[in-house]
Image 1 (tube, protein in one colour):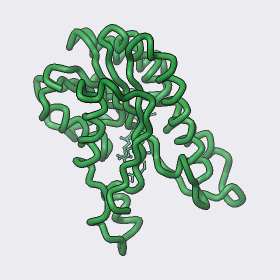
Image 2 (cartoon, protein in one colour; image 1 turned 120 degrees about the vertical axis):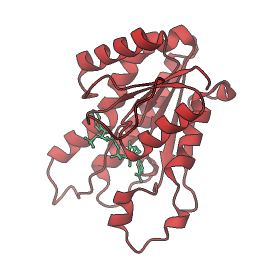
Image 3 (cartoon, helix red, strand yellow; image 1 turned 90 degrees about the vertical axis):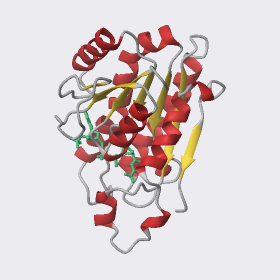
Image 4 (cartoon, protein in one colour; image 1 turned 135 degrees about the vertical axis):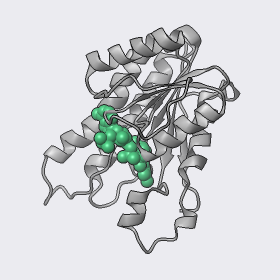
Length: 227
Ligand SMILES: NC(=O)c1ccc[n+]([C@@H]2O[C@H](COP(=O)([O-])OP(=O)(O)OC[C@H]3O[C@@H](n4cnc5c(N)ncnc54)[C@H](OP(=O)(O)O)[C@@H]3O)[C@@H](O)[C@H]2O)c1
């Protein structure tokens, strides 16, 4: 990843932060796009945070990518990590949760990807989208979340086909449970040693972004640890 430029959405979240750190450690230049403003990561020459960005706002995302390209010269990779989770049944929940999940999980990825494509075509770059295991098989209360993440998988699938001739690779990773503070708080009795550490997960994302994965596009990689 040396000297590659990677844009990480949701880079101030748990997984996004791990990916940003791993990419920096691998010698990449990193831009974090997140709506949080952050002192969550220490400033470095190879790190750019172009302000607070709502990833569903096309104009704001476009401006952020222009800032990244102006600073680093090119863009080689996009890790679409921004997302979120809400548990609610359809019967007892509100419909606003469906809009929220659609926006946070799917529209963020579609918007960042649309803006990124011209840059990635120029470098034969790569995209990694973060889906989720329930996108394949949802449990109770997971309807809106799973539907939005299933949308991420279909986006990955169709975009991989659309971009084959342009040379942009598009893959998805599917976590089950990542070892995050929120998951520990929600599941205090779980065996955390079986969960995937964010740093372990980050390695898989970096691999798919890297030139070691030039033969891989349109793939869905389940990353489940021992869950
Ligand atoms: N943690 C798990 O066990 C797990 C399991 C399956 C899938 N995943 C997926 O993995 C990804 C990362 O998970 P995580 O646990 O690291 O999540 P996280 O800590 O909540 O990080 C997500 C980040 O994305 C940001 N974000 C969300 N919507 C945004 C928007 N419209 N514009 C800009 N930034 C936005 C969030 O900001 P706010 O905090 O302001 O919302 C947050 O900083 C997500 O896509 C998630 O669905 C996680």
